[in-house]
Image (cartoon, rainbow, N blue to C red; front, side, top):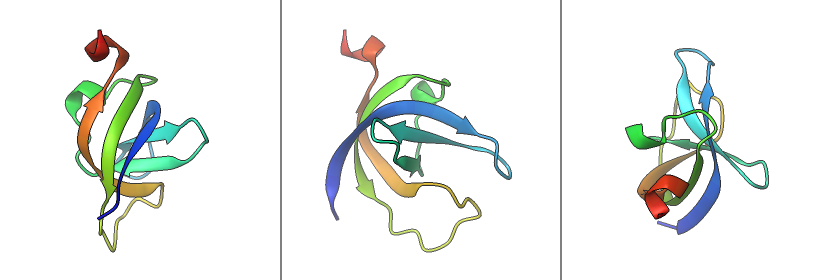
Length: 78
């Protein structure tokens, strides 16, 4: 599995039943399968190490599914 870092902002998507995602600095959309509660604040700056999820199907047609391995927010980095 490919492991990489993303930096962006947490965003609540109100599509279907709703879910949390991350929009990175280049405008790419990432949909963490395991979004930690600490990151579920609209507009929070986040840095995450992720691996792409091998999810085949989802009701959400938004973003690339990923699993978060580790994360930081500005408040946690201090």
